[in-house]
Amino acid sequence: MTPTPVIAVFDVGKTNKKLFLFNEDYKIVYEKSARFNETTDEDGDPCENIDSLRLSVFDSLREIFRRPEFYIKAVNFSSYGASFVYLDEDGAPLTPLYNYLKAFPKDLHQQFYGMYGGEATVARQTASPVLGNLNSGMQLYRLKFQKPDIFNRIKYALHLPQYLSYLISGQAFTDLTSIGCHTSLWDFEKNDYHDWVKKEGLAEKLAPIGNADEVLPAEFPGNNYSVGIGLHDSSAALIPYLVSFTEPFVLLSTGTWTITLNPFDNSPLTDEELKNDCLKFIQYKGKPVKASRLFAGYEYEQQVKRIAAHFNQNIAHYRTIRYDADLATQLLAKETAKISGATSLKASVFGQRDLSDFTNDVEAYHRLMLDIVDQQKVSTGYVLKDGTVKRIFVDGGFSKNSVYMHMLANAFPNVEVFAASMAQATAVGAALAIHQAWNTKALPHDLLELKYYSATHTLTT
Image 1: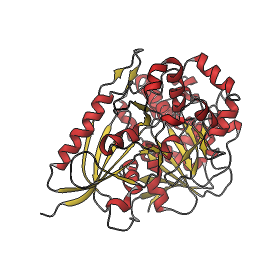
Image 2: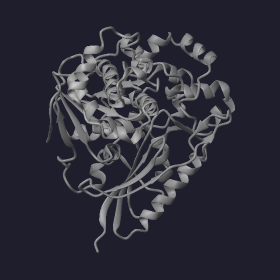
Image 3: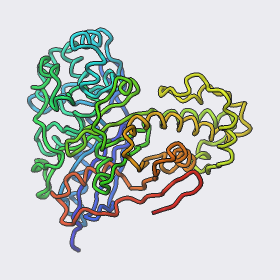
Image 4: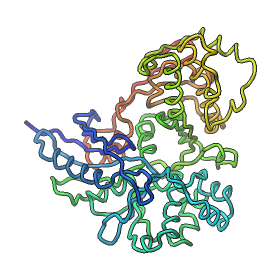
């Protein structure tokens, strides 16, 4: 039997760590998933178990290289951002993989923004809302002042996708999709590291910048395969759409966060947009992508639990609720007065609602979705201002939610709204980024299955 040529992609999320093998038609021919128990850092805060992750990558590669039915031609990586691995001269991690939700010290916050012109100035220049440790550059800044002995021993600070690549290639690179994602490191006005990065001595701790489509020779034993330098997951998930469509669109990527990405808007971020969690990414070809974020997936999970508990229902019940247009119309008609904070992007107004006001759980559920889509209309609206975009593609969890999709179509009547069905868009994006290094076929044109939504009907295309 002739072995199938494939690419291996490690897709590392906060919860699930997955390995996929794709054939040259970008079909999944093998997959494996793992979860690791979190560990804690020196302060007792939860964090990723970097040792388990490293060993899992090695063990998984050894396993697939032993499989005669596959010929591994390349390996690439995508993972969540805002997480640094600090390596010493020997390539060993110096610290735990700190959680980006770890509280950032107030004194260092004041010191930093006092030194570099204030929050609004730095946020505008770096296209990064002020997010504490979620601005990964601030993690390096904290180390410099709180743990100078460790900071001085750092050879390279690598974002997680590039650390995973380093494990296999033995070469350290920085990737634009990682440093260009709300890190506070990159000056979008100058298209270079921000001045503070150089003044504080951080630039010398960052590996040389590589291109997302370049590959390296492998150091890890196996056949003669290539290694990509890895990508930030949000940027990787955008690649299948950039490959498939040339007309302006936005991608609404839904999960714990709903992130609206507009690769066709190059306008500077305003102070208002920055305050409302808008930012810029850098896509894999080095161009900026305007984006807005909303914590809608998390809010949905919390409020569905509340509805289920109140009406004594199983949470799984809400995966199959169908859209009821008449019920949605009735609920909108009842809303005679705006509730305080109705347009806030911090939390949906549903949290203030009394569940005993609803006849049943289906009515409550539709009201929750109306409230979430109200927020989404504001959030997505920040990256639709110029009017050139005529299509919204929705992927992730909400794309499978009939109620959400119909309401979103109602919220944007002048834009075509599609649910995009694609198996593992992030992993496919990482494979597409280095297509030329492993795939002998042309780029595919059938990557995505689309379902069109309007207020009244759907149409699969």
